[in-house]
Image (cartoon, rainbow, N blue to C red; front, side, top):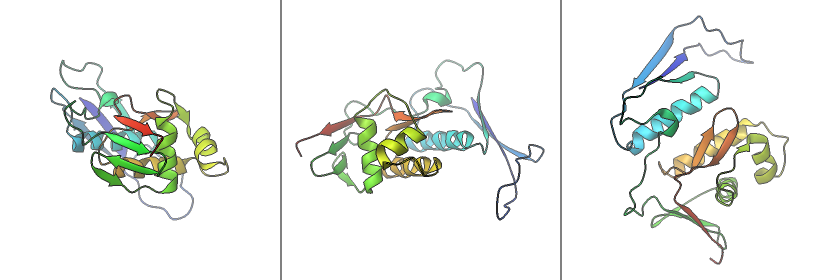
Amino acid sequence: MSVVAIPTRPHHPGPRPARQRTGPTLTITLDLAPGPLSPRLARLVQLLGELAESGEGRLRTADHVPPGPRPVADATAEPSAADDTDQVRILAGSRIVRRGDRVVPLTRIEYELLLFLAERPRRVFTRLQLLASVWGYEHAVARTVDVHVRRLRAKLDGTPVVTTVYGVGYRLADEARISVERGR
């Protein structure tokens, strides 16, 4: 069971006022059934994690998780070995990305971000490192990376590819079924 508490706050034009924790909260409780999560539920858990990381909420996992349910930190749908629709192929020569039989239309930055992470599995990168390596400069707002990661995840339609490492940055997901093909 996982809980996310998100304080509600009115919209204020201009600079954000200091965050006050005395307002009402919205608490969402998810009872996760045994087995892998559906793609929609995995996406919901991922979005709640992003809210928590951005400082707009708090993410807390229960101290004791009964056998079977998966904790939020591991909440991604696991594709079956027989299902090729979640296989992501990066055709580096033509700069085309395919998910199964479908071509995924990516912007230049989304493509470069995906390729950069796919070529460096199991490494965690801060937002500033990604800005320097993918964008080629560090003089942008670090949250720019968050926007592009969110768009990339949406375009890959629930396929687990990018993992958020809370408080640090991003890395290629361990369960990512991704390959880079150089000659095409």
